[in-house]
Image (tube, rainbow, N blue to C red; front, side, top):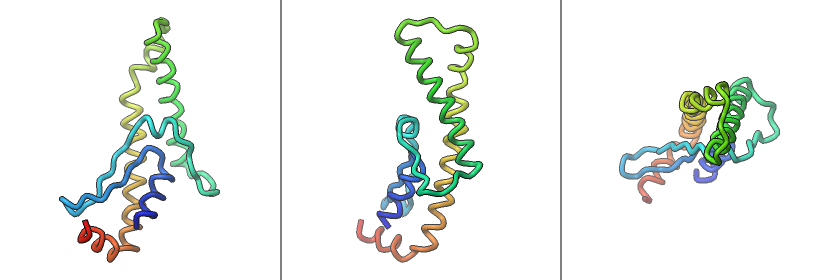
Length: 125
């Protein structure tokens, strides 16, 4: 079970999957820093349209981070660059929703395969 959860974390950069014994559930967390810097592990599979869309938005976020870094270092941005920086929150929300939906689907498949393992894991905690 632990290996399967780690596999999801590797396939979806930025996602963390943690068993939560207090609620008998699973916590999903998303770290922007992680998915902007981690390499995507496709496992040798062709990219889906969803993967490509995620990568497109991630690229925009990396560009915005570079612009923000330049701004913090004292460089003034032109109007179009400043407009890009303003869209950061909106783009993060978009990519976060895509990643969390994908992780939820994988977790449901995993849960169906390992119902007994999940139950045992909670009792061990």
